Amino acid sequence: MTARSNALPTQEMTINMGPQHPSTHGVLRVILTTDGEVVTRAVPDVGYLHRGLEKIGERVTYAQYMPFTDRLDYLAAMNCNCAWAWTVEKLAKIEVPERAEYLRVIVCELNRISSHLIAFGSYTADMGAFTPFLYAIREREQVNDLFEMICGNRLTYNYARVGGVSGDAPPGFLEKTKEFLDYFEPKLDEYNNLISYNKIFVHRLANVAVIPAEEAIAYGLTGPNLRGSGVPFDLRKDEPYSVYPKFDFRVCVGTGERGTLGDCFDRYMVRINEMRESVKIVRQAIAQIPDGPVLAKVPRVFKPPVGETYFRSECPRGETGIYLISDGSVNPFRLKIRTGSFVTMNLFEKITRGLMIADVVAVIGSFDIILPEIDR
Amino acid sequence: MEAQAIFDTLKGKFGDAVVELQGEGFSPAFAVVAPAAVKEVSRFLKEDPDLSFDSLMCLSGVDYKDKFAVAYHLHSLKHRHAIGLKAMLPRENPSLPTVDDVWPAANFQEREAFDLFGIGFEGSKDLRRILLPEDWEGHPLRKDYKYPDSYHGIKV
Image (tube, rainbow over all chains, first blue to last red; front, side, top):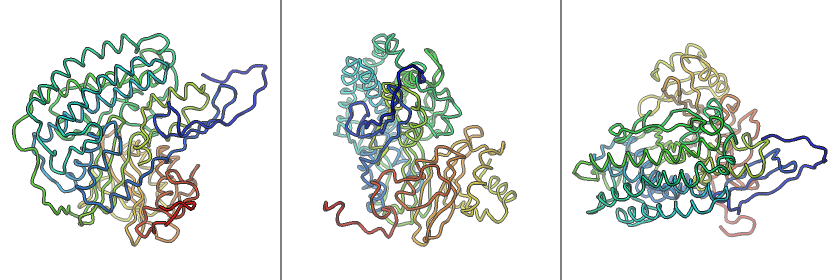
């Protein structure tokens, strides 16, 4: 939507939005300059949650850093745990037992489902429909129960280890996971009937904040935000790691089905469809999981060789890349974490220019940003 | 294209501005270039049809104690290959040209390197602190950073 010219003279006004605002998904502050209802400029101000996670990394050992990765993206802590483990394993060339990799894939995909559920639920709540949020939370509880069963925690899991995972799946875990999948899969159709194709909801999202594919690539968007623009790039498929090559799944992309390719609705729909693919992956993983140990032998005083490595994995909010430099001591020399949300926020100012204020909320929700990952 | 081939192409094109290839122990390998040449090399890497590095995955500042560095991790969606680019900077007044007009994705990450390392990016369209408050003193990710006792009278 663009600014309409009318006879009423208006004055530009600066409005502060956040950092405490229900629809900014955390402590995001946006400084809006508006002309009537139209946003002429929206400058994001981040950093309210900066804890210096990269500096902390230089003072703890590789194993001790694992719980800090939980705090990167608390809605997808399993994915962050595994990203750290895979990075260190790549640097030190550690062979991980196959059963551990299967367990990692299972928990990562379950976590992707629960993270996308929050994205879906909070987005619909932002758009004025509160009921779907309760549905999403109901389903997410069951994922939390599964995680509690496997590692004892419901939010910050600290489950992965350098060389494997902290413990094998307890008896009954895989069966319970299967039960959850059987329960959950039909729910996706229910969501679609409930809200996805609701006329008001579609109107709020379709044709809003269209990101063409070239722009998405140039601005470094990754994950569902990139795929929403119709670019079929998924690290699980295109730069396969762990045991992902063994599974058959589809890379979901935006199609512009209700508006223009790359609009808010496409980004929303990619997440809904991805949950179905995650269900497929977990089913296959449960069917194929081999027996065996779940933790490789890693020395207690662990000193990886001198070197630098960059490893990226597909997290629910896009690529989480870790640039790790080792000087051969017990502590990392430098680690830099590149997160999907941080890079996506770079595009925010450009994409919101000329939108209505209510559409800014639609953009924040469609990016599915999370603030601890931006501020680190 | 393999890292060695990319490095040879760069060497042939830019000569002495391309210093060395860091291959052993580095994944992906890094082509080390002179700081002043970063922008031209970046533009070439992006626009050459055989290279077309259309995506800047990650831009990081590094403090190697005796010098600073800026590391760029590049990837090409078209050719599906990757390389690192690195520029070594002196400890005094570390500064190099910005690449935010080559890859717009660079802006936030350059601001981060400016904020946490104090590395300047000449010609940047918007270079401000991003994670820390504007009046914060010092650059925390430097190895010689001294932790402050207080901030605005608040003990930390």
